[in-house]
Every structure is written in structure tokens, then in C-alpha cells.
Length: 325
Image (spheres, rainbow, N blue to C red):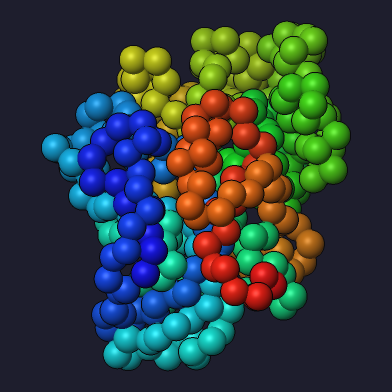
């Protein structure tokens, strides 16, 4: 099978399309014929091992896994021993584990618990939505968002941001989205109650306070946003921050028990795809697609994601047969 392989850290130039053996499913796994996947911030961080200390997790000298890719949508090709949840040929979507080869390939093996059957008639490219939503859901679980809460999302147009916005609205929260001029209509279309154009005004001085402020892109800070928080409000970050300041602040918040700054840790992905399926089927969640690339052009997708300008998800089309939905 063809796969995008990187056997060393570096720029997108190190990614090569090569032939590798097709995976075989272990017990309670399925092998999926991949029709669509994504390139995201996590993949870019893994490619460059950035920040450097992440090599403790990715591999000290070279990547532990040669094939990246977290999001997957495709058809079940084969089923391992004990598999009972799916049948061969079933259309599924989900998220690959971090500790094994991923979906930037024609086939990938994943645990049954990490995928769900796709909503009827949904195109594959609109089902590769788990990675951003997984982190977004971890934020909302950590802050215990409830109906009626007021939340401001800085960077609400990325994969995490659009997922945060939609999941927060499905929970009954009132959402203020901070984006650039070009994305104002987009975030309105997916439910933002108020939009702020950060290129035209200082979003920290909009005259409101919030139960929660979430930086979904790692481009602001607690110190800049704290005037937006209610006295008992919480700032949540999706990034470590410059020099790891968010880690230090979250540790101090934990020590003082004020819960002022948090960096949510994603929980187990088992069953998460089924949660998203229910949200999509109820009309509360949909994919926001920025660009699409074919698998041979995946290095260009990495380069685009690294610009920090993507909106929603960047899709990689893998299958080349006549089936696109």
C-alpha cells in the first residue's frame, strides 16, 4: 500500500510517498481502507518534534511511528479476532491512536472502540473531524461547561475552535467568537451569539465578562485575557504557551485551588466517535473544510497548515476509486 512516511524529524520535505506492507488487524481491531484523512497542528508538531521536549513522547532520535494521521474515514477492509461491532464493507470514521501508525496511508488498523459507523449519506471528507473535536471536548469536560454559561473562544475558526463553538452551543452555552474579518460570517453560520473581529478592535475590551475564556490557537495569554474573566472564571489553553507559561500557571492554579488557568488533558478516545455521530445526526455538528489535497501532495498540506491560517480542517483524499460518499 502507499503511505506518507517520515522516518526522521524535519520540515514537510522529509515526508515521502512510498510502498509499505498493509496492516493486519489484531484482536478487536479493524483494518480500514482510508478514503479521507487530515493534516492538522498535531501532525505538524509531531513531524518537527516541536517543542523539542516532546521527543520524550514521539521518539528521542527519530519518530516512533513512521506514518502520521489521526483522523480517518473509510470502509472496513478486515476484522480481527473477537471483532463484533462492524462488518466488512461498512463505512466508518474515527480517530487513530497516538502510539501506532496512522491514517496517512491507504489502509490503517485501529481498535473497534475508536471508530463508529458513519451517518447515512455523509461524504468521507466531512467525517474526518475527530482530532479537533477531541481536544475541544476535553476543554469543555475540564471546565464543566453548562447551559447558560458564557464562553469566549479566541481563534474560533480553526479545527479546535469550530469544534468548541459547535459543542458549546449544543451544551446550551452563550458563545462569543473572536476571529479575523474573513471568518465572521463562518462563525455566525455555526452558531456564535456574538462575533468580534480582532483585526478591528481589542477583544479584551468589549465590555463583557465570561465564565470561561478559551485560547483555541495558542496565540494569546492569560495575562492578556484575565480582564475578561469573572472573579470565579477560568482561562483554558490548547497550547503550552511561550516558554511553557500555561503549564506553570495551571500548576499554580492547581496548588492554590483557584482553577484560574487550566490545560485540559484529552481523555480516552473510546466511544468519542459515537458521540460525534450523534451530534452530526442531530444537526449540531458539521465539518468546516478549508482545503483538500491528494495523498501525493500531502507535503503541501503540511506547509499550508504550518502557516497557521487554516480554517477548520485540511482534508487529504486517499482513495482513488469512484467512491467519494
